[in-house]
Image 1 (cartoon, rainbow over the protein chains, first blue to last red):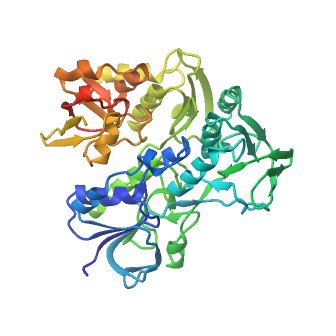
Image 2: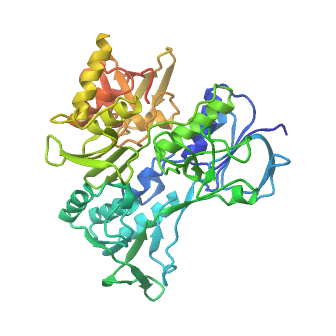
Image 3: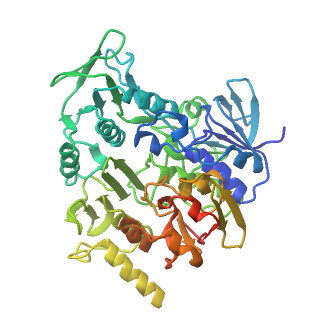
Length: 412
Length: 107
């Protein structure tokens, strides 16, 4: 069998590499290994509503015919277990060996496990895969008391899903505030207040000590008391799946270390993309690992273009994130550092808020609640490198600035 | 079941038939229509499923909602009077034969 591109991982990033290779005219063999039995799918919807059957989940990125028509060899339910860099082959669990000219690691991340006693009881779930989401969806149908462990994006999304299903919901978070470093301290109380208004109860600064029950979870023991629970869902962060890289001797450090072209710093014939990759970014002080659809999509496309023979481009896409939490739409454009100066501004209606982060006097990141137009304006301005100062934003919005700029562009 | 024709900027047509009630963006993705990115999966968050409704059919499709209307000011390709986000359009039998034009860029 002749060697071509082998992609390890059938998520958004791996899909992006494969589809871009073909879109750019690459005509060698393309093999994608996916460890799950499902066609590559979107993960964001999994934690944003209750899913009870595969029918209500239209999450496949593209139908099966897409791969067939483009001669992409999609091997599902098949995990790559070893990588031989000298021979340039990978070996799958089934024993299949596939040679490569270029290897792309798109292995993603896995949930950090809950390690307290009782974490293996029935009724305790994390949500990462389609199967996880279906299990939680079924459990939610009958759950009266739901305890969410972790006040991050996934935890807050699931809290509102459970609430919408009629459950009583308590979120337990070890830190003193929600969303850790992802959200500026200025905006956090406003987000929390909105969820509380709808009935979510928060226990921040609270540790989970144990889960208890006779086979099935019934109680959560915390540092602030015992909570009844029919269902426990946890989202306490994720770690990159980097064993394959590490075992093959590639440099890893909370992610496969890559250069600005997303090539492994140890082997130019291997690239890494998406949640499993850590590399330089013009908006960050040091190498970063980003867990987002935007990052997975853009990195997959960039590596696909390079391998297909296009002029190599350093990775520099503006990072952006979003999280739909019940009636709250949280969107983030850019990368805020803890030392940035943040200014909170109310929008033109009570539910709209923006937090503008400035570094050395210039806008670097924007967090918005229920204000998608302002988020898009932020992305346009930040991606184009348009300098925006606090003075520019006095008494106006980024939306107004971006519209004015567009009008200028059209005239000139 | 309504049929929709997606026209790429190069003139290529992609004909898609989907059940009534299907979201236009989902119908495009399910049939692998190139040019609909839909990075946010249909949550009116990203404006990467921008389409131009054929000028003869903007009536039955209807105007954008308020949030969508604001977002359309910041699409990658130019906004036109016929611009919509395809994640905000549900197909119905009255939209059978709909023609939508895909923009040059989405991101």
